[in-house]
Image: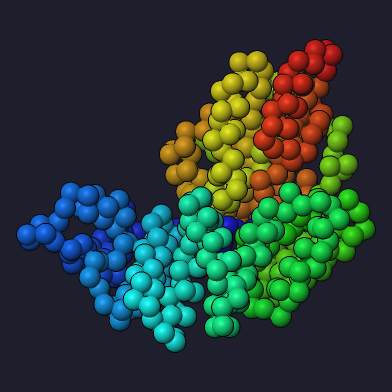
Length: 397
């Protein structure tokens, strides 16, 4: 991509986690008052557990006006707080409670739009499959709504769902979908919430069989994204427009894979140290929902085939080292991760530039002789390719 997942920016330094959380809760009015209804003056065990699990949930019994004010206060929080797990769910719950009262006019519009946006953030930022399913259902329900703002928001997310599953389309239908995306985004004020559809669109462009059409599409969408009000999406668009050619399988097949740099724990790494092994090189980032969704499958594959000579090398594209460090501490990934290089006070990603990475996750499967054998394969096809390469004894020789 190289896009930041719905604009996941640097987490601000807050003295300590405990102080930061307390300040957040007081600011939003979440933890400074009882958060659930009481029975005989006491909160139930399940209610306490729910609130402890997610401190951003709105209090029970809040009026429509209080729920609106709650959502507005949440939206004023710093981005580092808005990106925390559970934050979007709090807004979604508040919006759903407003909708349960069958509101009219502006209140209804406010609730539906915030419900859709918060479910979108949950699905993308937290890789919440249930939220993604709900988002798809609500997008279909409201895309023809008489309220223009509701219909526009729902239509965007309905279209996004179609682009996310574009790999299932027949090649002949892909161009028509890209035309639809271009028409829908043209003239719109593109911002952070458009990163997901932008990256999915670029992935679809890279699947086009006609290189000339793909090159033209990249330039068109690059120019479109470059006009975004969000600086990261705008930068992404400029890079696309300048790239001039799609990332194609034919560009890399049979060529040596060169990966060298510094790992997340500060060690020097060169892919040559895995000579004679089958290697999956995965370009990814913690802010990328599809990347995180792929991790359980990669762990399973690593555990199954590592003893047979299979390795994974992650090429991480996080621009904030602390986010990667926290993620690795939590997930305990057993494979090496190469990180960006600092230059002029900023992290640069030369490997992503070298291999023309425009969407993530992007994977390269490397045979025992160090050459690229497959590009961007997943699922059952990836498993078949890995087993085939592991069984190939001539490549190692």
